[in-house]
Length: 214
Image (cartoon, rainbow, N blue to C red; front, side, top):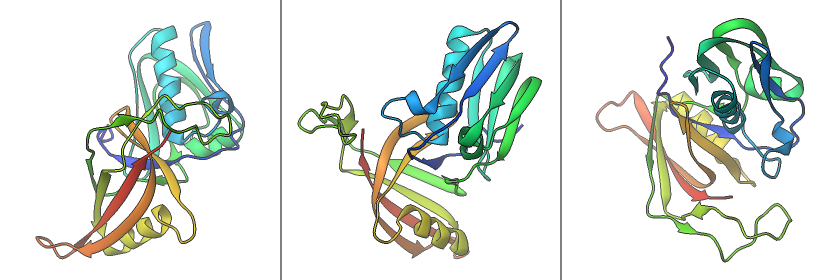
């Protein structure tokens, strides 16, 4: 079995098409990412919503997680069929499966899963003083903080690649942080700084500044 405790980031993006349908016996649940929230989701949030809904509405115990390569796995205690279509399939790395208890897709694009990821967050506050960024003008019912940080540890080549991905020049990158079947928040990456490891010179660290968003 794959390591269920790999932590990583999945990019939040708009323009979702297609669905995930999970079937157990004659019953099924279907997730349409374009209708979730304001339509901006990640592979992590979409798959976690699918297994949560499957556990609530179908039988069995469900779990979803990613491998170090970013291949998303879904496990269940009951046999199931899964059909993933359009760019929902592309973005999650999942496709079509029949009569399975566990499925593992291909490595999904826009996923970052380093050798080690540490997270630190201070007390959060409800962001009732600002309107949501989706253009609705609504007050976002979320918790946010400007004092979150994360540290990635990996090889020099991987750290440089992660830095270019997560903190690109001229734009901000928004991600969902998740591991072991749980999402730990949605963040925009506002800063990044790499440094050489001290105890093991073969590895480098990438310190990330994070801001919680709706």
